[in-house]
Length: 503
Ligand SMILES: Nc1ncnc2c1ncn2[C@@H]1O[C@H](COP(=O)(O)OP(=O)(O)OP(=O)(O)O)[C@@H](O)[C@H]1O
Ligand SMILES: [Mg+2]
Image (cartoon, rainbow, N blue to C red):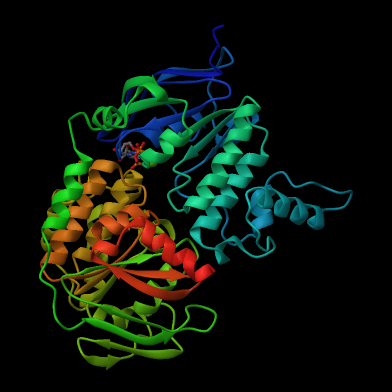
């Protein structure tokens, strides 16, 4: 029996000024299948999806849904045809409540006005199905990124779709949440839905995908049943040359940095009511300290206390031996501390400014408005980091919003490296970054560390934390429960520590 695809995209071309984002791209979606769309940062994955959902108009090519040619002109139109998407950058309404976000545009109506009780009740039930139990009447913005992402997914799941597209939905979810999402996807598969799944996590690809399409530089490279394409072949197909994950892991740990004998930042009994329980933490120059723990364990809260975003109401901080107060990020920056936040859309990039302006933003802020960096110097700095971090762009003057997600993340990292900090906090620095770029960034982090930078590293991928960190502080329920270093630092030991605290 041959199964016909629900949806076929063929010969899709799309150019933006200076970029051929899609050159003859294609995609076939079958009912009851999860289709992984793979490719490096800037390969054209999100653009292909945007063409499908009517966000972008293709320059050429055709889309057929159940054999009929379609050309959705906007998201609403695509949705009416049964094509719905959760985008890479969450684009719900932060000021509306969680419930409103799930049902916006299609409220269950009573005779007079909107039936709030029903909406909240249903919204809570939809989230409960994903095992998320939160107050749905609070504004979306009051929840962490991961929860917001789950809300976006819940919204997509409640629409009656034939085709569901998830563009990097899992980059801020922890393992448990990913598993819950996958359970939901398996149910949808059974109902015959065609699902497109975009991720840079290869484990997830192999856990959920039935079929894989690879794009490279906007071109269709191939379509493969997931069971016949090995992990290594997949990587090499995406990158277009041979790279070796394992060799990186081996040599990075060999090049140990020389660690300062006194901590640069030293926290004692630092805590905040309703936030972190008081904890001790020492951060040394020349050393990467990782924060291990599950989502909600207090990793970001710890970072925010050390950067003066949240105020501590107990404990002390010493920087370079001197007792200091960190009441604002501005003070933290003055002490040579930099923070690359996880939520690049809200706290990070300024979409309308150029790549150059985004990169020099923190440096300029630290110098103050009376010490304006001449444009030539700005360009030199921007060019240097574009080169060093391999940011894919034809021009530093382009609005940063036009870069692919992973390249935006690299520009954000450049912004903080440009301030030449003594301590750098990296919260999910590789979120949305492809595997080749991820290895490059990790090497760069290690190299900066060798030059005497103290690094606090946060990632929801435990294997990544283990790979880069010299020492790991383990957190659970907003409490630091211990530290692990050297040979003890393996995944099992960290999870055992987290589980042990539970018992
Ligand atoms: N609105 C736009 N204006 C100009 N260029 C754009 C625009 N949107 C995308 N591009 C460019 O098109 C190319 C493909 O980008 P796209 O976002 O589709 O990549 P991606 O495969 O989703 O990457 P990532 O894994 O980083 O999310 C990139 O070079 C990007 O800079
Ligand atoms: Mg993308």
